[in-house]
Length: 85
Image (tube, rainbow, N blue to C red; front, side, top):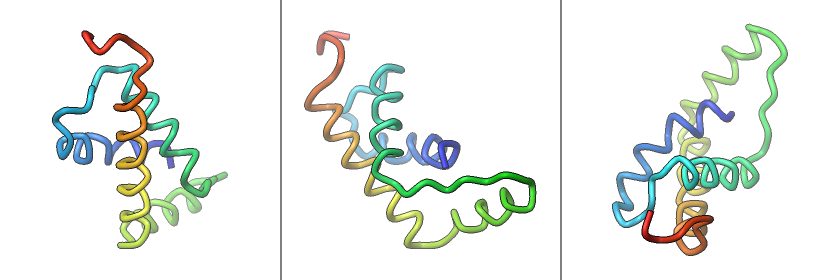
């Protein structure tokens, strides 16, 4: 799940050019988004393949985009660094 959220992050961040994209804010955004999404654990290769196929589902993609969008808004409003960075 973490890999999927990280892979979607650049596309979602591109829609919010005013949002900070420093490493601190990116990590905070991903952490917040992951906490909003249901976990998808895999224990072996076959399960990993099945989980990767699920990433293609329209609803799954929409959920990840929505979680990232909410997280970007939250982090933008409350960055853990000075806004000068």
